[in-house]
Length: 153
Image (cartoon, rainbow, N blue to C red; front, side):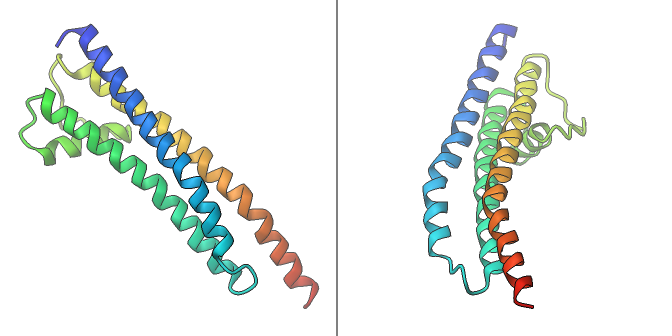
């Protein structure tokens, strides 16, 4: 694969991954709002926060999982990696920027792999912003409950 082909493929996979990530998060927001409204606020408030935050983390992990599977499939199709397990391992190590270096792609696919790492950096940043946003929405409720609890003691 030429350098230009690798850049175009890497850019396309990065864009696809970001679209998946943003779409999963955007589609989850109305459901999170509905779930937040249904969870009892006056009974077991801490359990409400735990459930809500765990659900939010599950959504983020789900988006990352789809993206890593996409990259793994791409690496399996475009490289000489022997099987999906090896491809998935390589995609995960690259996406998380851990990069053990025990598997090295040939020159015809290395540039695409760098886009996988950039995708991980970008989508982890989006995930962090989303989780901070969710925390900033529920933390005032937590502190309000704490203030309420201490006023009655």
